[in-house]
Image 1 (cartoon, rainbow, N blue to C red):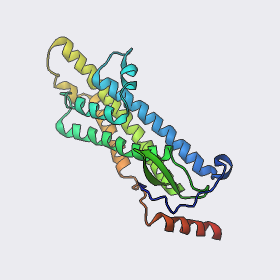
Image 2 (image 1 turned 90 degrees about the vertical axis):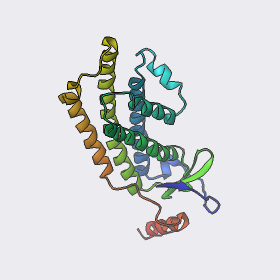
Image 3 (image 1 turned 180 degrees about the vertical axis):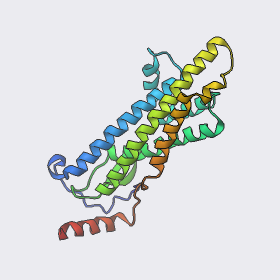
Image 4 (image 1 turned 30 degrees about the horizontal axis):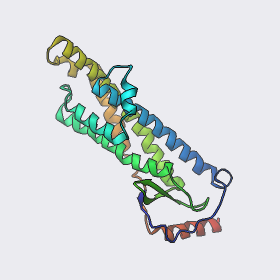
Length: 231
């Protein structure tokens, strides 16, 4: 759905985004950005509970770490320190964090994209270190991406609830200087929480994959433009 771009051949023209870009494209772009805002905010919650910082300082600390990638790497390290999770469970949780990083690249390209024309199925962006990128911006691509983010939001919510439960438990362990009681893992709250996390993770992974560029962008633009003229 996103790749490096060669814009040398792209025919750009002036237009009004609100009046000329199809409303359903604008609707999906807005929905994707709002869905991502929720995921990013929930990731901040995961980060703050992972490092168990004081409530009055959590957002202060989180907002001073530049970018999501740094927070995710810290959370990954913190997961290794929770004695409640098995190594296999840590791998599952880290996979979700890695998925966030993957989706972020596509979200950034969409957030910073420019369309060469209102009907273009391909947008262009310099969001990644100044390197030009192109991203599919047709309804099929945007709707598939939104479905992935919608499921990821639930997945990250359950990740947060697991981290929150384990952080509270770890506080209790530290206060009383004893190891995690074996009953915590077998308790319904932990087991049900992990079951919900796995459910949404599985549902996200079973969704249709994000569309890939089937051909060179110039051919794609010509083909879609031809179809529009026929319609």
